[in-house]
Amino acid sequence: AAQSKAIADDAQADLDLALPALDEALASLKNLSRNDIVEVKSMTSPPDGVKMVMEAACIMFDERPKMTNDPTNLKKKIA
Image (cartoon, rainbow, N blue to C red; front, side, top):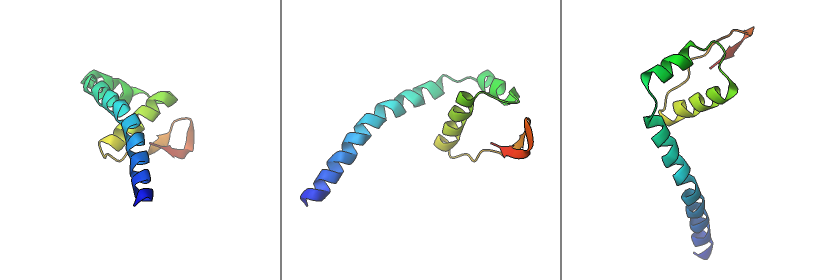
């Protein structure tokens, strides 16, 4: 019982650290406009930071990214 309590307390501590970041991320998503999304869609090769944010958004909204041909390497597919 003591071991499971320690595990639960550790998990709660980790959750307490993660929840403020999640709340901040959700608040930032609410500030996105349609034009922001259109701008990202028009990028042929977005910066790595943009790719990472869009991957996170896909995960949060349970959307599978669409794979397309990499414009810099035609043998490679990118999300």
